[in-house]
Amino acid sequence: MSVLLSSIQRATEWIEQNTDPLVKDLWFMGSIWPVTIVVIAYLYFVLKLGPEFMKFRNPFNIDRIVMIYNAIQVIFSLYLVKEAFRLVWLRNDYRFYCIERNKEDPDIANQQVYTVWLFLISKFLDLLDTVFFVLRKKQSQITFLHVYHHTLVITFGWYLTNFYPGGQVAFFGTINAFVHVIMYSYYFLTVINPEYKKAWWKKYLTTIQLVQFVITGLHAFITLFEPDCDFPRFIMILAIPQDIFMFILFWDFYKKAYIKPKKIKQ
Image (tube, rainbow, N blue to C red):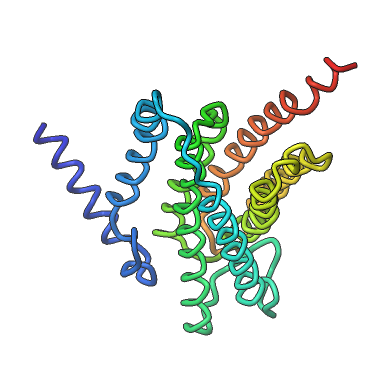
């Protein structure tokens, strides 16, 4: 036990010492414990405590809360996209194959890092998706894909934000925030009018998510062959198989939700 505690202490000290100076004073940064507690609490609630609590209860009528939540998500995601274009994509020093944190303007670098941190905060906010599913007794939507996706993004996102904020992270962040604008706009509409759940274009939301993983995976792959890119290659090596795995999971969902039912009707 003493060996384990000693190892945990050394790991904690290493994280504190190697946290990027620009994020060390921001929430959830500089220590692995806050994000670990949030993830464990999330998994415990959505997989055990929540379903048990709701077992003999009627679904909560929280449509208005969910509608406000979806609107906040749309506005927040739009803001992140706007900031990403202002601070990264539209700058003269932007390079598609290698997005680096600004080294010449400390103020821009700080803003870039802060925007990456805000993106991480949006991933914490995303966890409410599952909480609302539990409270509305929509357990069928709490799939492995759903829980794995939220858990992966928040843990990997914390790692990147804590140690390597800015740079290549901006590419995935921008694409993902743009996808969320579309997704949460749709969710907002379904709360106002449930008929939108049957919209003919609903399947294209999953298609957009599939395209997202293809684009981010290819971008990470291309970056591996950029010799002068000042961004850790091992992160790209980790990101590529995750993009592939997420594509497989979303494609499996797409087949079950849209292709197989169509064949049965025929």
